[in-house]
Image (tube, rainbow, N blue to C red):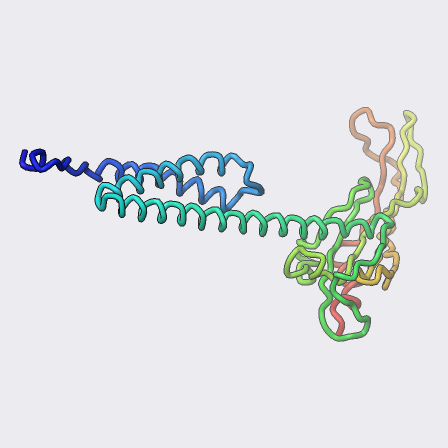
Length: 267
C-alpha cells in the first residue's frame, strides 16, 4: 500500500517468463540439434519446428530479465536473445554449407564409375598416379556381374578395402579399377531327352585400370575363368525349365586383387 501512495507499481514476478523460456528452449534446443545434424537447407522440417520455439524462448527470456532489471533488463535480454539466435543460425548455415559440400564431393566420387562406361575424361583435381613410384595408390573399384549392366562400388570389400580412398572424394582418388565378368559363348551344348539341353559356359573377368588425373588406361588384362565340368550321361533338370548351364569357376575377388596389386601397391 505504501508503494501505491508513492506512485510506484509493484514489480511483476520474473518466474513465469523464465519458466516459459526453459520450457520453450528445451524442445527448441533438441530440434535445433536435429537441424544441425541433418538439415540440407534452411527450408527443412527441423528448422521450421525449432525456429518458433527458440524465438519464443528468447521473448520469454527478455521479459524475465526485464522484470528483474526493468528497462535495462529488457535491453540486456533482447541483446542476449538476438545474439544467441544469431550465433545459432550462423552455425546452422555453416553446417548446411559443409554438408552440401560433402554431398557434392561424394557425388563426384560416385561419378568415377563413368570410367567403366567409356567416359574416361581426365580430371586435374584427382590425386596424381606415377607408375613405378613406391607407395599405395588410392583406388575405387567398380564391379559388374555377367548378369548385370550396372556398376557397383566394391571398394568396401575386404579384398580391396586397403586401397579405398581415405575419404570418398575425387581429390583423394588416384585410380579407378573396372572389373567386368564376361560370359563367353557356350563351349558345348549337350542335348537330353524331352528336348532339354545343358550348356557348358566359361566366365572370364576383364580388368581395366585408369588414372583419374590423366584419364589414361594404365593396365588391362583378361582373367581366364575355370573350365566347366563335362556333361554327364544323365543330368538333373529342375521344374519346367528345359535349358540349364554348367558354369565354370569365376575368378574370385581375391584373385582379382592379386592381379591389380602390383599396380596399386607399388614396392
